[in-house]
Image: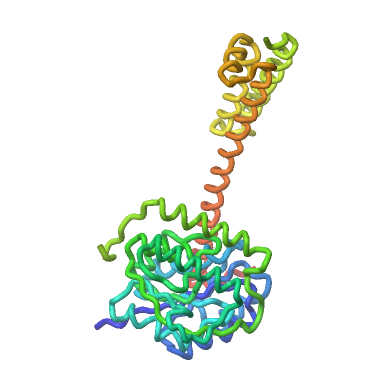
Length: 242
Length: 121
């Protein structure tokens, strides 16, 4: 069988402290993976650091937010003809050693989108703070109902996609706070979605983009997006499940 | 019945709006497609200001009995809301197009520097 071309998509905004290690780790895990870092107009030297470690860097001319940055990576993967893409965050919270797990169902042809979930296994080690756990649970329940399939971690940014998934997200990817909505879009477009248990690390540098003040906006925006997305019609994809 | 003075003031204000919009379009400072809603606003307000019986009748339908010119305010507010909503859709479209362009620039820049080397700046 022809060796599949694999790309790691890493969005980064002011992550110069972490991005070098992230790229190194991915290359260390499998030197055959091409790494593309999308620099969302950082004010530090994120792009230079990533480039010096051998990553391809896409520089956005102004800050477009996480969703738009990630989508740039999917568009790159589509244009350059990659077969499989994994997406990891630029802050180092997704361990490259876990890539094997999320690649499994894509490699075997059983899934178009694999979500690295922290909650498949009830004995998993990740215990978020109470409020966040409630939020994650509510979104997971909502997406499960609206998408017609049980998902446990809709806020995970650690995912793997095959060519069908890359095509969908290159064309259609929500712009701010994208993960929850993207999961629903994938389900409603007929992608075969699977989740596998992964461990994530606590972030080592920088701070989460979701502060307490933004939480309310986050919740309301995502709720509205889910409602609207479930009223919208998505064209079924070629090669996706019926 | 609408006081004559209210009619005159309303008509002058509406005419001014129409003239300002036309002048902006003439000077190419406002595109026709964005001028249409404003012109419609001006024309409707002008008609309601001059046609006092009409304003009375509409006020009757709306249940406004004490002061028919209140309908003028209501109609003006409605049109302003329409214009604002229209702008929100325009901004949304521009936002999407902006992001699309930013992404394309990032992709093209990478491709160009791959073939020609990084830009010398």
